[in-house]
Image 1 (spheres, rainbow, N blue to C red):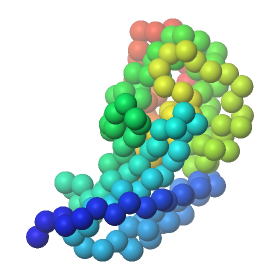
Image 2: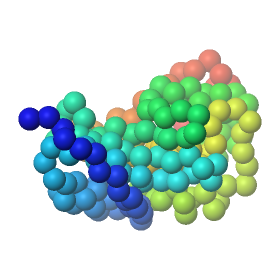
Image 3: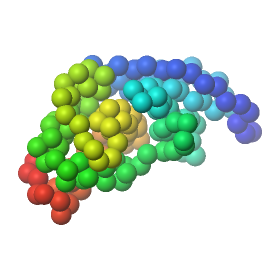
Length: 176
């Protein structure tokens, strides 16, 4: 049988330092799904009007999902490489502010909510996406890694790749 319909829902999961609870809450929402239905969960709203949503099921099925960004201009799936390239541009633009940004990303990695973390931001970059975009997309990328690599590295796989790519970039050597 194939997918028969699509259901759209709002889903707000607030990260409060407990990664396991964050994943558990998401999986509990997934357990409420009906068979043969595609789901779109609007999970974040950006100040510029764009929305981040997750879509499932995917080609992998189970608890896997895709992360999408919706705007009037286009709807697309941001990739790990796009986020890392954006971070490299920010590092080149302002290495000191980039260090602050990495400390904020580390908080998201440690399961603290981007909305709370954004209250600490007193800087911005001209290059690339907003800090808000980066933190909120990474929140969902980390959750996805937690699910996909459950019995392995979970979210550490993505964080280590970010650190590796940034550290080995030719742009303003950065020490971790």
